[in-house]
Length: 585
Image (cartoon, helix red, strand yellow):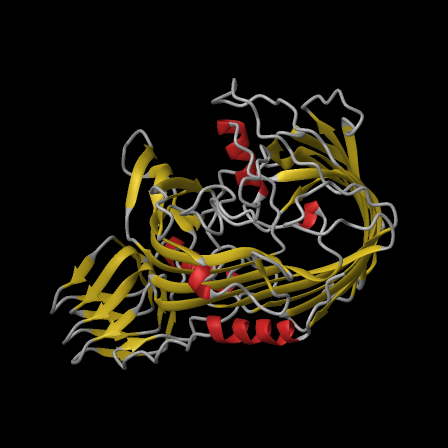
């Protein structure tokens, strides 16, 4: 049995702090006024701008008494506007005089030499510049985050809800039964498509009970109908996911969860999101994830420590089994064979887990400032494991009883705003074997593919020994580490199709690219077998940086979809083009 050296923990924490620390941007010049643009978002909000600020923007623009200015506009010297003024999408240059409140939405404000603004100023999605010789009398408030608003057919502004291409809204209806009880009936999907299940159809009721202001209970009963038939006895066509949640406190700061399930679980779920896996499989018959059948039950508990720290612990008992790849339909390459799904180390597992989250991001979906850290540890044990035979170079034979392992994962991200339109973001991902017996197949790792190291092919590093042939391309590594960096610059650009009213004056809906971001990125990392012996890295070390793989790339992120090019810096890999439905990280 391999033993873990505690020095690795100290080394990993040091790497996390030193590799990803970046000083805060220097203070802006006196001519640029920025009022606290990096305030963390409220807990319940996913957008960068606080809801109160968005409401003020809409109120200013939609007021019938407001003077509206669209696009780039210059107020000439000697010209005066009195009253409430609002500008949308463009640079407002004031060389004359504005007397009254001034709101700039998704644009910049420049008070030129000789220009004057007497009144409070609110700028969202841009910057405010007061040139030498310009005058501003009043309060100023500047937010760098763009306002999620769109022009309506009557000329007003409304909140624009960006829907990701990969999401399909559920059909559901909620009934209020009185006495704090509500019932929701739901029909949706499991959010992915794969070579094991096809498309999973999720259905069932959920009951929510609020007996007091500090207690909320939910009973969620979901069935999962798998559309890909499986003639083998290794997978049911009907699965389930039954949850009983209780949350406590006025802000729901603590809770417990009881759960029982019969599901198909993914391997290496830290890589691409489920929806992107599903679209790739449905369109191109390429499933970039492996799976195992999982039936069990468990108990978890969590607690918030303030607004930014969340702690969670739990215990689960799972029956984990191998499943075969089926032959669900795909739009293209439907006649090709699916990649086989690898066998796993079947057995009944008792699992203990602990997790900690730290989040100071100013947005959950499109952050531009703040930290995000998630770390967890899992202890697993089994007395009836049925191990798969792997090459001796990969791992020692597993014991069939009294088997136990520990693994960990750390994901640290730092978002740094450089200007209203630019950000520089960093990420470190590190995980794998921590101690005990060798990892089971379903807990092993690899590198290469669309997410962590896109300049290399799928599982370019999978730790298979030289000459080892495996049609399933199974992930066999004990540990992996990846560092990622990206520079993002938002473009003031719009291209697409406008659905207009018959008079052609205003539009009802815009379909296309709106304020995309150019992304320049680089990734570097490695995956390896841990232990003593040829080709392995000692347990208390990581692979030498000189042996890491690295790539560079560029792309355009249009919000709902991104197009990228990536090129490896070694191994003669070709330039790779790929699409993403979400931000890289």
